[in-house]
Length: 243
Image (cartoon, rainbow, N blue to C red; front, side, top):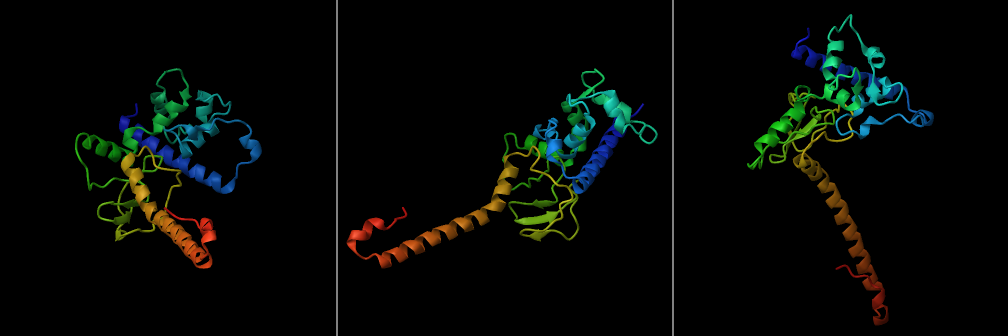
């Protein structure tokens, strides 16, 4: 029998393997319109199953019924090297029907113990109940529940680079923005609360404010030029005023 720790470690290894396969597939093969037209279910719309996990589910679901039967799951059975593969998927079969639904598949790999950044977010949310966490560091998570490569503290203004488990890269901490290599491509934050969204908004605000300021400046300059050119009272109605 496989222990819970062995099953969790295996799920983490398989998840990393799926990610590597997905990355290789994206680099070598571009999806064609005919493949898109086949009508495969896009698991990326699910809030809990995105990127490599959803991609692998689609690859295994050969009959497109949104269920993985034993013959489909057997495509990744590596009994000789990973004796806990079958017990892992059996443990994820909540309905005990011999098949894995898309939700069962997702939860199988996204159990709390395998999501370091999401675990931290959950801990922070529990601490914030009835308390003020003003000035506290809020981590930024990717869709798979790992840490984003770039982390920033909104109160101190410092940023630094981390690996996907949140370990800080030595010598990367600086005042202001830093450039960190994103090891995993993602399409957004994973289950992050309002605090994370606010941090992202704060990062984009200076650029937006700059563009807005430049736009207003152009309007005022144009209005001033029109005032110089149109001094006659009968052309006052042609001048636009900014209120």
